[in-house]
Image 1 (cartoon, rainbow, N blue to C red):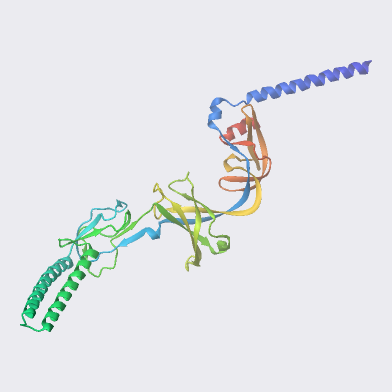
Image 2: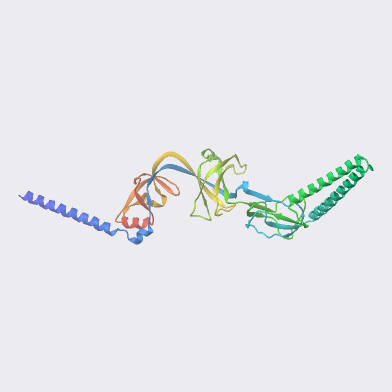
Length: 361
């Protein structure tokens, strides 16, 4: 009888303890129920299965698309009168870049006037020769000679007109430097008052369209075998640290720089908003697929504490759990997991450290 009484007492005691535990768990869940304010401060991401990728980090710089860059040279010598544009200005095709007062232009104007007068004289002599020939007062060879003089005068006038067209000259002794394309002035080597020689070999301006740009990346000799065209590339700049520009490797330069022993690769990017400027430094990350697939979470969601890695798993506002995970590989934005989280589960990737501290204590 005593054994029965004792057994019943223990059973009741066990049920009471279990009830207390359940009550404590409910109270604990209520204690950690997320408030509306906290829900607004966190960010939820879903764990997904992705191909495992390695990253190759390169350094490089932004340059203008060389197929859309034109250097502007002076075609004549003289004194630079005005330069109405500045470095970085956007100019349209045909816009005036500089005005040069040139003796060469004045000489071309003189040659043009002489050629026009010479043609008029040659045409008049031809008419006279033809009239005399009809009256049998001169020989046919005189008409032929007069026609040749007209042909020579026309050829000289056509040559000068073509020179005027190439130089863009008008009825002035000034030579106007005009923009050959629309784009930004990315180089300027002229100021008012500069004296230009006729044999000057330096360009005055460089104009480039930067709605598309190139990123030139340097690949170390040890990594050349890992790079191929078509690889996905992520580009980061100091100017926009929170923005990632995406492109693909579209050209590999199969030569090494003799000084750095590095090979260059090119990534072409759309730059419609002109955020990327020529000569910007860039960090380039190339993705290398390994053929393996694992569950991934954002790198920001992983908490490293006491030599272990944890994430905060969210089911609902009253069901939040700290869970240890086994990290396979960590990249800049994504972390691959061997275990700990299943695909489809949601993790907190912003301000989760507050919940981790509260749930761990």
